[in-house]
Length: 317
Ligand SMILES: C[S@@+](CC[C@H](N)C(=O)[O-])C[C@H]1O[C@@H](n2cnc3c(N)ncnc32)[C@H](O)[C@@H]1O
Image 1 (tube, rainbow, N blue to C red):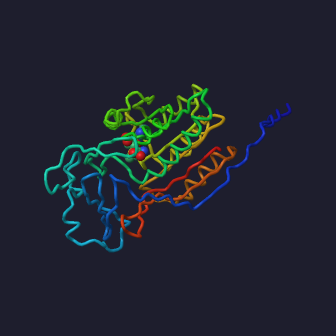
Image 2: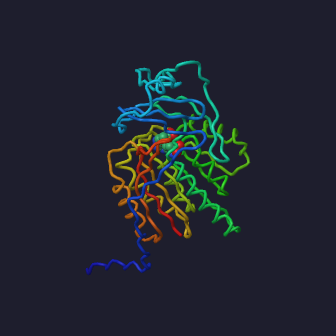
Image 3: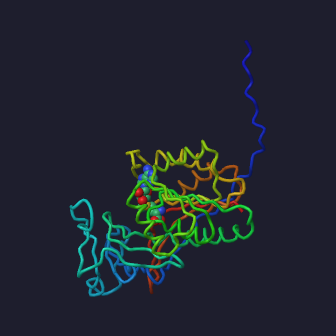
């Protein structure tokens, strides 16, 4: 019997996105954040009214401020053996459990978390602004239907609340109940309880697979996955093995007139080119512009920059 010919794919191929790299996106800090100094494997930062010292292997040069300026720090991340809670921090005086900070219209809490975080990643600020501008313009232009944004691995919610303020309907997904509770605290603190944000505690891959099956779409997608993570039911996330399939599913979630997709990666041994090429392959027929590079923080009163993460961002129009 003659073999059945494979039916030709008659869908017209879309354009590949134009590529721009390397692009360095820099934050110089704001009222509630500054990189004060760095060197000899450590960095000195100010989060609101507290100065903190954390290990930073990339700060290989010499500190520029005096030892006294470092000695005045309110908290030092020691990385002591204690597994959970603030045991990994050493404090110079009494510090509150939380303290308030602001980025534009959003107020958020600082908190000395295990694994050296304080609840916010300041290097993300250029993404928050870029996404906000895109949403504001689109929300004005297409009043008939809302701008829908999906934020995966959303943590304490700044990258969900800022798009919501800009006019988007946001779906925020994170595997950690604690992180979702923290994000909702930030929403309440900001007086933004009325904004349309859906908070979902679920494994990101499972959620996305279900959205694909349901045929749902989004106008903007933000994802900032860790290298390794766990879903609420122990589902394993491994960036190097799971990211390609995650992106392939996310491409199916992009609405026909989608605005953006932003991927950030941190704490991995890879070049921004590796995530650029993966995004380029995933979005091969989407047209638009794909820009990739690094997110860096510029020192306050200084000329030096500290690289924090890799990104690749696509804009549809
Ligand atoms: C460090 S955060 C990312 C930073 C965040 N996008 C921001 O800008 O604040 C990583 C988050 O991924 C979440 N996570 C880890 N594994 C996950 C999984 N399998 N599904 C969903 N979320 C996961 C963690 O709970 C954590 O909140």
